[in-house]
Length: 361
Image 1 (spheres, helix red, strand yellow):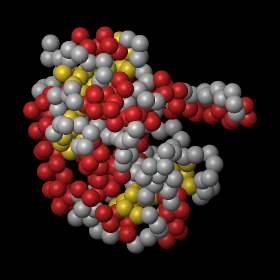
Image 2: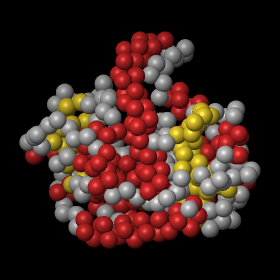
Image 3: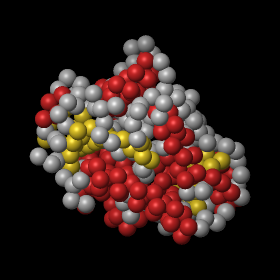
């Protein structure tokens, strides 16, 4: 039994989560490694992306949730269509109650990538620390914590579980700094799975938008100045702004709002953009893959944590100038020597591939 189980956030209706799950499995399978994504349902994530959210404490919000139901359902359906088409799932669905039965079905279980070790996101679900594993060997690939520090009871939870891993790889240097004083294990920094696939491989998955004119693409997921930046850039350049996953409120009527594109369409919008303005880690990744003119706006998530994932990536590739806290319209047109960026990236990818070959093949 050499089949490997991958445990990750594949059911989140989130572009980065779904695409990194696809990319890790795709990469491993093309290298002759048989894998399945364990079809695990996390209670908090399921609730977060449920098309209709009933809020007993806030009855007025239920009217808004009802209005949004059709849109949310359509978007979720597109994500699940992508999952069913491109990701090989386990034949059985799992929850916290029955996940222990997976232990007998794989020789190795690999958790990652994405913020699988951010307990705030998972609702303190230690399943993503592989606490149910006793027979299968435990590994991580590009696991992310999503914050700068681990404190209190979390320290002991991480120590107890990660000490049992055969090998640990992380996505950010900040995660290594966070864990090295907690866990007595060697750790490697590897690239996000989306960067293991080539530009050509992503082009084969993408769907091009039905638009011929130039556009500025905005993908905003945190509290940042992305909208403000895009609006000023649009006035300067005289080209339209397209906003992916656009909110219904706090958005300029001058923007072209897109609200339920599929993962394939999301890739296509980035691939064909003249400029990309984002505060998203994965939109930054795909901007680099497709060699775009872009800026990554400094943002903070709902927990108040700065998006260190972007800083780590841009520092590695010496693209720090593309990270902005304030409006600087000149910065987006600064030339990027993508030949040099690719050279730096290939070095990290080589180390990442070596980690997979040595531990997961």
